[in-house]
Figure 1: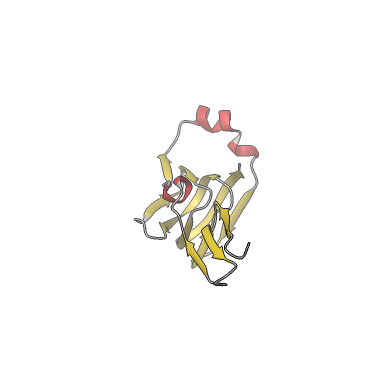
Figure 2: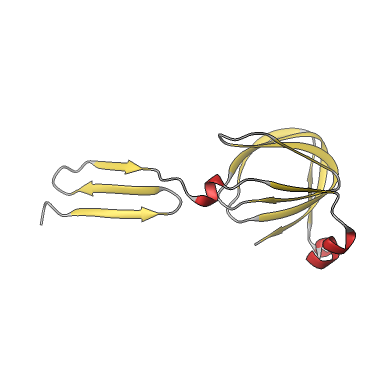
Length: 126
C-alpha cells in the first residue's frame, strides 16, 4: 500500500525511514561500537610479540611530513619503524604514535593523520 513504510538499514550509514506517500525520507545515523572504538598503542612491544604476529613479513608503507584525513574500512595493525605521527579520531582525542610503537586502528574509524616526522611502517589489515 501507499502507507507502507520501507526501512533500510546499514551498519555504515544508519537507518533511513521512507514513506511512499510522503516521498520524504528521515534518516538517523546510529553510533556503532566500531565507530566508538579507540586506537590502541603498545609502546616498544617485546620482539617475541612482533615475531608471533609476523610483523616483519608485513608490507611496508611510508610518507613524508603531511596532514590528511583517513577512514579505516578494515582493522589495521601497524608497527612504526621510523617517524612520528599524531592520529586524531573524528570527535576524539589525539593519539601520539612514534617509532617502535605497535598500534591497532579499528574498522570504521575516520581520523586525521598529522605526520610530524616522515614515517615508515609495517601494516596488516584484518
